[in-house]
Image 1 (tube, rainbow, N blue to C red):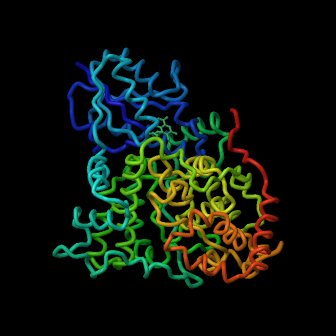
Image 2: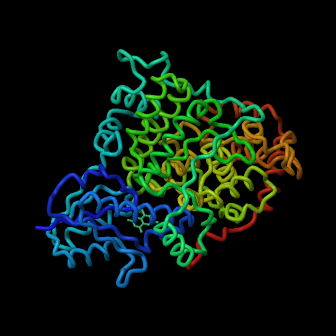
Image 3: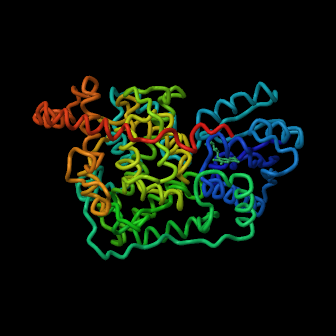
Length: 515
Ligand code: DLZ
């Protein structure tokens, strides 16, 4: 009686539910071409996953597990999860399969095919690294008309007891975001996240990625990511000790030359399993209890994890595999090539693309208010911008990327997730960043060839979608502002937006490339 326990590339946790179990078991880990190429992931992202997988296999062996590890270039590797399960079932004479539920519908559908195909029992184990199970989220959602994040978050605060005292939120407010939008003064000392020199395992992986995926987007080297749990814990400790105290204050700021500011840079480790949610939020709460970090920082950080992260995962599974099909704004434009090349005069976009090419990272305001906002304003087809987000970020897996991009950023779900489109003009970017003063466009001008394109695009977007959005209570003020502009200025604004859109380059290098 041998149970096969496949551990996927985003399940690299020693506390994984499938690893609490049968004595007669073989853990199977496989590097497969299909996973690295169903979208053409950033080179650093593939390197992170393969290196972390190889290190995790070693740790499991050290802990006494029998681990069967198939490398990408091993002879006979079929290139797919199902092909590798088939070979492993034969190799080990497996009589059962036990696997933790995967992070996306595509892979779940594969796993659903295993029992009939291999005529074995397949046990699908809930992923309890998340604090809210799929079943609990379904129960929460069933009792509500609108699935509001803030409601979910409060529920999670009560359930976890985090930042709670006698049934009430510590500090008497659930959400301290109003304290978190400060503009950083010049000369702040931003801490760089810890860097980890590649060891022999990582060097092998870097060679492999360069050889097999060298044409993918992104710089592979220098590569300094954590690839083991021990290193990921160093990254977490560093964040808690050094960056968390100022995380809240400046979490929405964009500063030229500063990629990481006071952000945690641990999403990439959490989402592949090197860190788990509970330990991360407990570490932040402990910093608050010790008096090492203020409430606005700790509350904001904990909300990202037990609120937003758990909520988007719940929405992903709740909305079903068809979620990605909607296109509420009827957007059909191809993604401009400069999302890959950075070759644009829009300084905020060029700088963000440069950073993501180098680091496989942008922080949330760059993602939401620069890159996502721009794509929505010009009407990029949701599937194209979604694929871009899934490709370029080291922390991106479909369960987290899709609700964030399809719902929150592009409003393609028509408001299932967000109460209004996250659209903004140049003034918002100017307030939050120091890009505009150095940009070839003038953020103060509203129309004309030298005006910041975000300005006219923003109004044109609202005007284009008036029928759909005019009833939205959070937008009436904007429509009021638009109406007060009067017909001449409205016409000039829309002409300016059209003129800019006519200059946009065509489809991107990384999109729809056959090979
Ligand atoms: C993202 C990724 C990549 C690039 N490669 C692999 C791989 O070779 N083997 C593997 O087990 N997992 C990989 N992953 C992560 C999977 O895509 C991820 O587990 C599924 O998308 C389910 O969330």
